[in-house]
Length: 394
Image 1 (cartoon, helix red, strand yellow):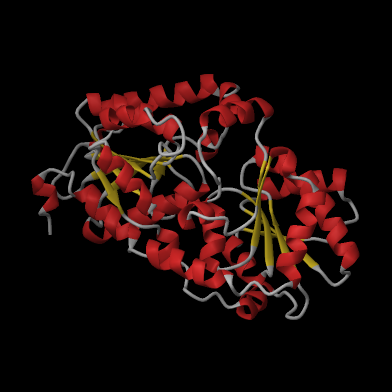
Image 2 (cartoon, helix red, strand yellow):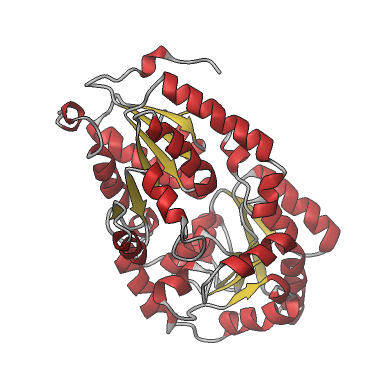
């Protein structure tokens, strides 16, 4: 890899290294960069990031998609490449030392990277706490060795770190800052050129290729039954990229070639706001759905071996963020063999055709709890790790 001598520390031009592994991390990274640029307009940002970060001047040394792999078994198939990328980053950042390194999510990749960089005297931050409170609790000791600060998005995480005396700052969630308290359905439909009257169901099988391959068949089967029962039901599917849209089309041709469904690329929040119900994969997007305040049915299917390991290791009553945040069964969850049309269809029908307004109080509570100006809070915590001459820069 070509090194860049221009990364040397400057009192007027701090260098921030950032590595993200998926689209949600790209959003967090972009918010952090934007906040840091307000104080340091000439700062340099380099590492691995997506399109949102790159639009702000971020230099990505590898494609973010290379890190977008989830599941214990799935990682094994990509292990050699992942180790090569991590080794390359260690070499790059030790030769071209940044002022602070920020690993955003992707804990299995980033915490090992942070550990190596911290040993070389680089200040390290991990943004988005790994789910140590849910499984592999002893990871807290490795995190303590690897990081100078953890930035947590969820309030119950900080208490866990405080118990173990590991530095942690609760910053809230940028999504809660960005999403309005009320998301107007008709306004969203107008923006997408969708009709105002019919019920709309959004199919949201995830942003990773493996998620689409495991979830779309039962999603298509459910959608066919729902459309047969209501010929006016409109189906939409927001895709994060053209690559995922191509995969969606290929799977639809295989499983549901006659299903009428409209694909919309790179406009997920507006699609959710325009919809009456969301049939979706688990992940950060379920928090977006709660903040947009739409009924949802959440599904997830792992690789079989990954699921067996997870059953043994994970100790949670729920796996989706809305339920974890409210500590109750706020929205329905289906996991593994439960993800089938016989289970999905009645849950979706209930949320499409019955009054769901009682959800709003819980959704508003989630929104208020997480609205803390997260990007600004995160930037403040990162700046506190800079040398004093950089902290005091005006």
